[in-house]
Length: 113
Image (tube, rainbow, N blue to C red):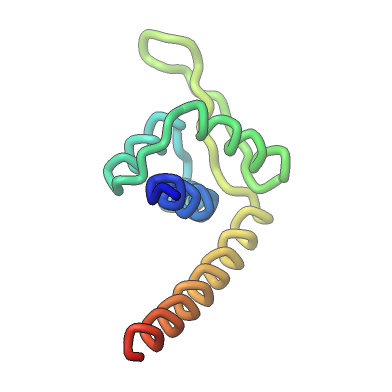
């Protein structure tokens, strides 16, 4: 079994939480800006991963978007959280904290044996 596969699955599992958090912090986010934030955090994601996720979150009524004119190109979609998205993100943060605490507790007790 290769460690890279497991690492990719861990990143994929946290991606919704991270992307929604970035959008919340920015209030409105353009996909390229989201990708740049992910790269800065060393969570490399390509457009082929991000765009389906954004579509799924939008279809789930967690995101909405507005079109804005751009300088020297076609209009751009900027994503923001809906009220349901805000509530969902709050719940995700809570679930994440519970998971991190459980993993920390379990791995700490195992390493002491």
